[in-house]
Length: 161
Image (tube, rainbow, N blue to C red; front, side):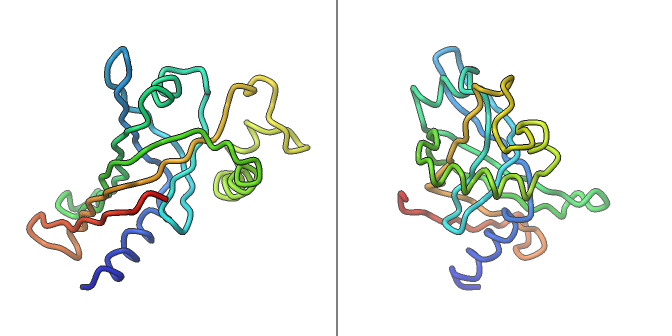
């Protein structure tokens, strides 16, 4: 299997999942948070969270993270698929990109969107402190027990976007 085929496998796996677990190292220690996400064609993850929580404050101090997206077959525990990786996270400051991400996030997660935003697509006042973040992977390890046997995996490196 060539690198392009592996990249397509990884992309399709990530595109069809919903939750990424992101680990940070902050001033008070390490922490892991789970986020609903959308993915763009460049393998960047986008998620929303409160700008005033420990995760967000730590990311602004140290943007280096590790992350994982995981799936397993409930009937066969040896059939797993996952992506584990490292990269950087930053606040999504680009207004046009934020709007695009917001619309795609709403399409993928209408039930979450209906809680965060009002009927005019403005952020509900109680969520004023929520912003989108962008996770840019630099390295990923892909595990797929169905495609690669005996606990083998493949790795991909990404250029900084």
